[in-house]
Image (cartoon, rainbow, N blue to C red; front, side, top):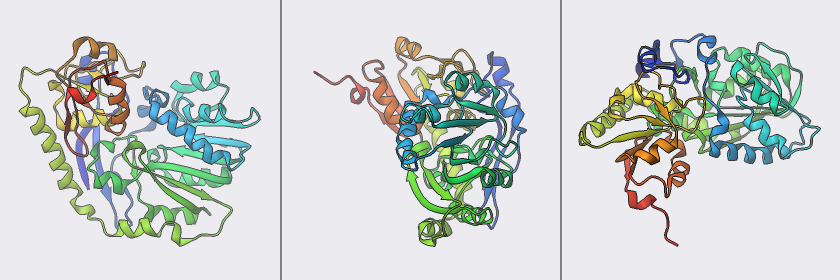
Length: 380
């Protein structure tokens, strides 16, 4: 369905430019069967992806706010024990912790060893394991945000839910239909093995005794779904029918050509820029790494700005670009800043007011350039 060629691991940053340029690359192709299950046709061993994992969810202010908002929904369930699957640095559970009684038990099950200290420092029970390979006891609420699609063995994942759940499972994932409708090919990378629609999920959930009781569309990650399911209710088709109906009408076969057009437009944009103009990027997120490598345009940039301390001073996989702090951006004032983390563009632009004076561009879903005047400090 979509072919992005050979791609490095997008969250494994490197100490030198030479190491980054020569990073090992793996096939990145999305295929889809008649059952509408979309997935990669090549699986990278989890140890290679997560041993040097630089992503930290707590760096993103919009995601922190998202976690606090989610707790309002969870609090109404009066939970006693919450398990967060793939909770990374504990951002979600810390948001719960700050708003809940001390008696609430919080458990993070994550595949990366690099986040253990951050969790344990916060008093969160941390288990380093792949979900499905571990038994951490029952919970009345299980949460998994932006992690279900990471798991190649989805049957084992769902068996883990079945084994541990005594209440409600809140699942969030980038919605494939939105991803395709908005040409967000940069959502595709090796950690995301599956690309989910509701049609196959309804069938999978039934097999594991899970009833979907709510589906909500979210802006997070460029367009996600929050699916709330339980092992304590009777199925109601009206909950998911609007989504499965939309999915049955979409032209999945045309996704490849639409992706190629999107990439070609991006290349043409950078080729048309005056050679003397200086360009930097903002957001060394996974989607940004995919975008730079898919276009092959990294040599047009000075560097990539990112707020994640673990990434600063390192080099973007597949490129010679160094990750730097905002201070470098404010000092250099390049002519154009391309926001690669386009799903957080409003927050990023607002945070640049009064500091950066150049133009700003976002490339997805359409190419938009904002003049410096529009982001200048507001007058008193």
